[in-house]
Image (cartoon, rainbow, N blue to C red; front, side):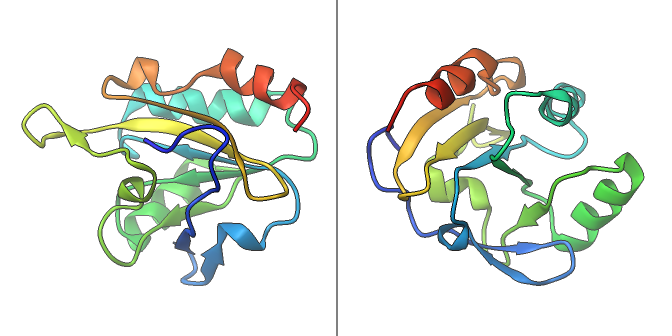
Length: 147
């Protein structure tokens, strides 16, 4: 997993409409939430919590899923996700930040990465079990801490 204080890796992803998204193109802070899968009910609760938070003003939230673009688009529409949902045209986007498959390669890790406007990782957290993949308090603390 990438470490806080390190430069963010260059992440080139794809939105549900097929447009290329470069995380480095965003001017302000970016929070990427990496879901274990779109069918994970725990991850879905985390996305709902992100949508309801009032301490993320000025932070661009991006939801990253391991599924292909068509499946991601259908899930986004069905669930009315207010954030861009991103995939990777090759491999899983999770690998870009070190969220790999664990437990004999069958369990996709979930997690979050907060990148400041200078391209530095301010918060990075991941877990194999989805209940531990979203660190709400850690994200809030990183947002309060000056760069």
